[in-house]
Image (cartoon, rainbow, N blue to C red; front, side, top):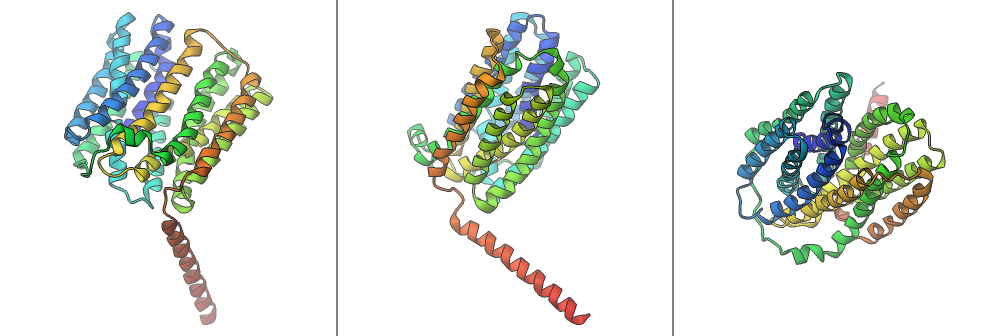
Length: 387
């Protein structure tokens, strides 16, 4: 699972940092980026619809192979044909996503789901950091970037060989029940606003001069590292205190980083923003790997997870590409205060949501920790008496 997620993030990175250097027409690259995200969202919906009609392992095998083929096609298709590669990459991004994320929910119990998600995210971004570092340090050519992409995607073959990926049986729910799930709507709203905010950052970064290049390069690495570390912290916190607190913490961190960026835009503030926003990403990604599984029964999980990826892909694709396609930029000071207010206010719905981690599980963990502390005190007391 980590390999497939890492491939997704690396492909997004390659569009913004590598493909634009090798493809002759930047407009086609940014248009292709929109195609990738649009078809990724559409294929995620398709993947959730056929979830009950297809063998999970076979679909993931074909989906992985399509990812390898689509990655390779980037090296050979140019001009308008590059858009075909983008479509294939989009399908490779979205089609199997509901399957392997629902598998995470199927094979974990609710009180350990966020921690497992945190470990998955940590492994994912370690893969991404390694891949990005290789590309940056060795200044790889297009064919070499493509080979790194293929290698990342091929790691999924190992997982398929080791695990049968058997689907938990359950009653399939219509889309109407998923879309009208009140609690899920409360949880998805902050995720929606979070992606709107991050989707608007290209409007700021596209207006930065070349003196910010080093800060952006180093900041991207810190962004991925922060996401991995933040994911681990959020995973343990979400299983201990519930899902709502990490969401609020992630939103507040991103809002604060936006405010800092707009207050005094400089290479240092850009570096800080990227690092802090990475931690915020880690907090949110981990929780939104757990929450759809918490709220959905077996048989309907693919649709909940599909919405979890469709929302950010459509928003990020629409907003993120718009600034490049239309050559529009905006100073950080003009957007940061608005975005910060939006992010802080978007925590209100999740505060009204019902906690998906049962209170009994939270109390059981507190009691378990208390018993361990008492046991440790008794052991220390016994050792003191013997001395």
